[in-house]
Structures are given as C-alpha cells and as structure tokens.
Length: 174
Image 1 (tube, rainbow, N blue to C red):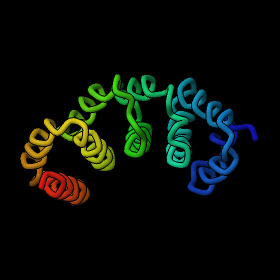
Image 2 (image 1 turned 60 degrees about the vertical axis):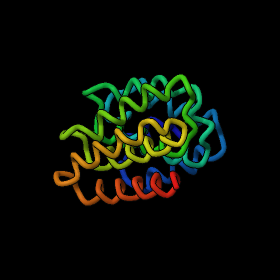
Image 3 (image 1 turned 90 degrees about the vertical axis):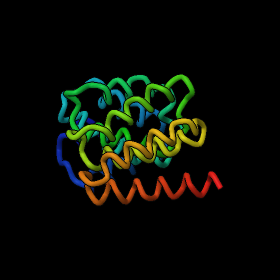
C-alpha cells in the first residue's frame, strides 16, 4: 500500500480502518504513518491522525519516542482540531513518561479553560488530567475549581466527563 496515496484518496471511517488493518502489528508501517503525520502538509497530517490514534490504542508502546513531537503539535495554535483531538484521544490510554507529565498537564489545563477549545479535546483532556491525578493528587482541587467555574457555560459532553472525573476522584479518596 502506498500510505500517502491512501491518506489522500479518501477521508472516511472505511479508509481509516483499511489503513489500521494494513499497519496491523507492523511497527515499521506505523513509523511510516508517523513520519507522514509529522512531515506532510496539513491535509495528510490531519488524515493520518485518525488511524494513528487507533493504532496506538492497539499498541500503546508504539507511541514511545514520539511524545515530544506530539506535545509540540498540541501547543501549536495552527494545528488543526482533528490533529489535536486525535493526539489527546490516544494520550488518554498510554503511560506518559515522567519528563512529559508536567508539560502535558499544562497543555490539558489550557485546553479545558479555553473557550476556543473543541468539546472532544476538552473531554479527552479531562480524562488525561484524571489519569495524571492518580500520581499527582495535588492537581485535583485545581481540576475541580475549573470544572465548577465552567460548569454553566460548558456542553453536556464536558459536564458528563467532568462528573465522571469528580465522582471517580471522590470515590478514590474515601
């Protein structure tokens, strides 16, 4: 499969699944996808982000070595929402190396506080912060404060994810 052509050919769930199946258990093919993700024009980057997130769900260790570059993309204002959404989606289910935890927390706090951040990015960011709160319980009060401040202006999706997070932390603290 010519991966670049497959990404340009069609942007659909069917095409995403074909790419994920083609990559399968082949780390080298995943690395090829990641190179396209990082070095191509925005359309290919955007389209590569979807199968990337599914591949990492199946093979979480494959993202090791890419954290710095992924966080760099999250911090870029010009990164497309689809790219950010798929990065934070995959980061929900992987072990974050210690050297990137503080930076990722800062990014996620920025996302959940911003009026411009897309709903899914906020929801995934809440989950990441909840995951990191297990190691850094001192961030729980800040998360709760932001949730309380934004409760009335946020969407149902945000409130649903926030409620689960708050209930999970309250239960864990007892």
